[in-house]
Image (cartoon, rainbow, N blue to C red; front, side):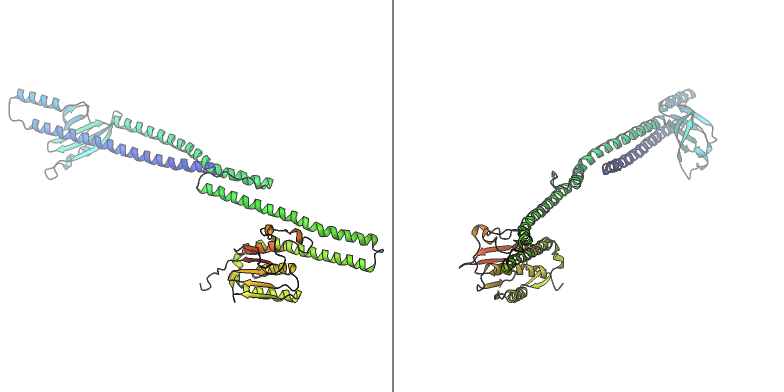
Length: 462
């Protein structure tokens, strides 16, 4: 069963239970009220009749004609068509039929045996069928006998039957209407979910991430649509970055591969015609191209993995001053260049040591590449940033905003070795540490290139 039908069934079922519950309570209340009215009516008629009979039985001695006339008048006043009334003697015989048809007489119902002066008046109510007609009878006992007042319950039963029928019809109709409204509500509520499902299927089938959803409202479904659109935007950006990386890598790899192919072809065709110096020059050029390819591949792998391998949950306490000092020593051993580290004595940050070492090494290597052997290189460390200063040619003002782009190389540096990914990797590592990169020209010549990181450490005392 679909979610739409489940919601419809739930809404319709809840409303049906409420309607049937309310109908049952309404029926019980109506039945109780009608029975109470009948009982009140019987009691009222019984009291009125008893008062009239008391006046009739306590008449003073008068002539027989006068007494008979008064009795007839009294009985006529007590007789009404809305009830059956009769007087029964203690021995169970009917002494007087006041109005209506005869009512059944039974010792158990009349309760003659309990009539005594100590107990006083006794009243008893019961239901009987007289000629297939339901009756309610009130028996009121007194020392002279028992007064029976009865009334037909046909109108009450007819009213309750009609009420029960109407309540059933209303309950069923209301439940069906509630189910229909529930279906409409479920359809409207689940429409964004259906669009989300369709968009997800479209993305899975077409592998395209341009199926943005229309955001409606600020409720949970609207938040879901916005989250889905954000996910698609992130996937689009990731795919664009991957495609751009592949295009740029293809472009950068093509140049050294073309040069290698050319040199190999020269050696194959004219190897015997070349003298030793020419052959050595070609081999050295090929070796340089191989080293450049190796560096480029290393940078590509590092760039592709650095941004995803740096997990903040695995960061540890790192001293930037120590990392910079170690990088300066390694560079000195490899190139013989003298690099000084100045600034604070200790800069503790929360980060990934290999990633930060790679970023610092790329900055220092970039400075070494663009400065002469005698040009000083200085690393300045603050509490949460590192900057490398050199005295090289500097950076053209129009290129300051692009030096951290992938594969970007200015026209002046295209003939120099390098992959164009070193500073881009620095930018990725800085972003993974919550920081940013910066580049500017140094007063007096040269450049200042560096990055910052978030200096906040987790609570070490918790």
